[in-house]
Length: 357
Image (cartoon, rainbow, N blue to C red; front, side):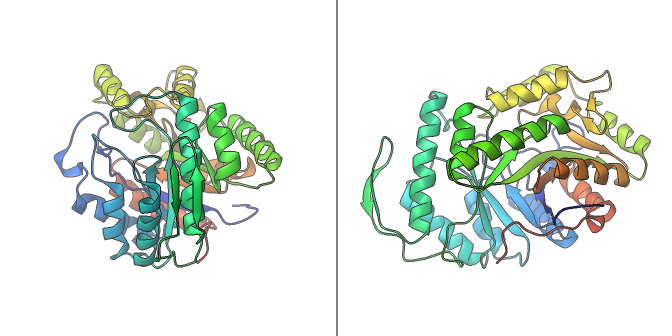
């Protein structure tokens, strides 16, 4: 595979009751529990993944912050990308939690900032992103060891940094995504890694170029990540058959219910995933190797790279040429597909974490 630089290759920790053998068909053995999610992370570490996303939910699954603290003590190499929702925690306490977990993980923590509504609330998009901006700024400054005197719309405090510091002494990388104007502007000024969802290669390229201009205007440079599902098999036909089988028992009303239970179900990014699916061919492919069938029962990343190992690697290369530096993959069921990707694809990729301890 030709590449300009090593990619960060991450897997997905299904903490939010998002693991299936057949989409839309509950399986008690795949429900989010400490044991099941622990085994996903340990499998990803055994396979050699660089990082793993620990998502944030409320009605679904288990708590990510608590899980991250526990899993940090039984992993040794894989980085932990912990998702936190801006506003859920008092900012100084969040900084302290991040620093403590980073110590427990010996410097292996990254942060995925989420800007959706908090459980039980509905606020306007501009207000949410103003709140997110304040939280990102205040938490970063505290983790950089700076005293805070902040009088804002959502945070009003004067406080010193926590005694406990991250291993590096600096704030971990912020991964952040969004498709609204407000989201992109927050990413340009506050994030370190901009995350986008599956789309055609040309659209991903346009998104990266747009964000480069926004970041440059703010005097900054970002890294770029793609969050996508993946279905890889020894042959293309086997991969396509696996995709068909995954949705073979999905009832449309069940899929709609699953899509609507997420806190970001009405976001602009989710809307784009719907557009992508509606513009696909009769088999659900938006373009060669990009299958949108998963979006029938998922509100977030709603497409998968599908093919044999060489085809999957070629698709990854196309996205890399479009400006992507990191990938966060998932597959159903997560342990089985983690092993399959780890055996068929990962050894052929040049990869390493974006953050180097």
